[in-house]
Image 1 (cartoon, one colour):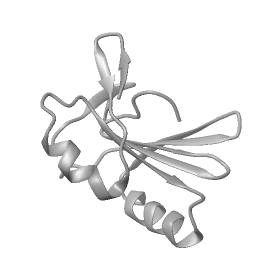
Image 2: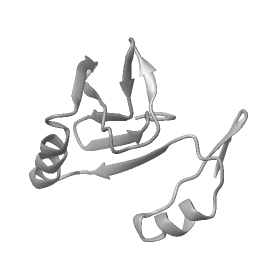
Image 3: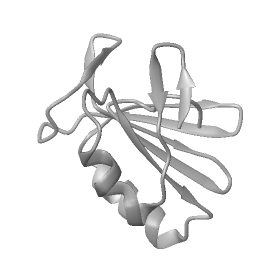
Image 4: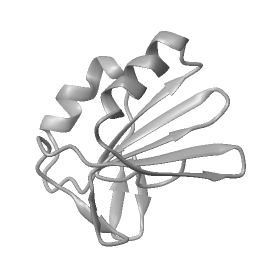
Length: 105
C-alpha cells in the first residue's frame, strides 16, 4: 500500500486480486500489469481493443492507447470523448487501466 496524497495505491499479485478488490470501497480506478508479455497476450489485448480504440500516441518508447467499452460503467472525458480503458505498452511491460492508468506506467 502506498499513500499518495488523498489516495492509496494498493498492489497485489493476481492470486489475491479479487479478495483485495472486494475488501476496498470507493475505488477510483484499477490497473493490471503484464511483465514480459508473450505475443499471445499482446494479440488478445489488440483484438479486444480493435472496435473500441479511440486514439493512440507514443511518448518516448511507450505506446499509449485510449479506448471506450460501452459495457464498462465508469468513464472519463478525454478530448471530448468517453474513455474507460487506457493501455500503455513498453518493451517488456503492458499496463491496462480502468478508466485510466493511475500512477505510473
